Image (cartoon, rainbow, N blue to C red):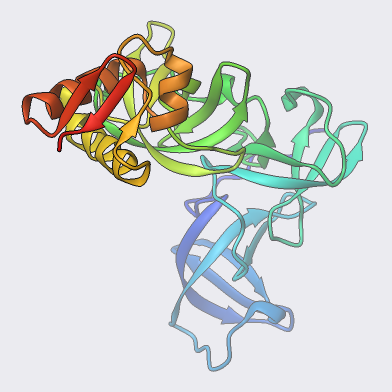
Length: 284
């Protein structure tokens, strides 16, 4: 016989500010209206009185009862976080997310086979029927495909999910799924890094092409400063020009060939550099 669904106004898998309603031998009961949750004695702050308000994280215990804690988990429902796998069972993998009860990633929610001790990007989810909090490593499938609120050129926060031979895969604004090709990165990135980026293109399937520089000519002044800085550091000359390969330009200036040509054109018009057959140099 299945357990009855849990109905409560308390938000499970999230932080709640609740009133102290009563004391017991096991802790204090916190609640709002008729709904309440037990905060065990080991988490009860000193000098806590009936009527006080307390911020706690609420989840369900192994028997699907509401439980409160003052511990801070790695994230709340909806967050993407990197977690370490603790134990692997036939039905799923238990992840360390900072609470006494580990976060379960069910076997059918795993993108690939998981191993203890390794770190994985996990989205914290909640079952709408049972209210249980669980994790999934099927990142792309659990990102929002509705990108109508996004615009090309918009600055976004990126969390690096994985790195491939052509670029990086990132979670965008803790919600969407995006790709940044290597010639748009401009700096060394590693799995788990966070950084700022810009939306270059929004595809029909909801996936997003990214860049670390704002698309268009608005990024030219910054790129021009990079070129001047590198020229000064290298003695006033660098053997790069408009016929150089994209790889050579990226190695010297950490920018795409198109960005390089725009910035060089700006500097040339300002009479700050001279164009030579074998490269560019500072105008003396």
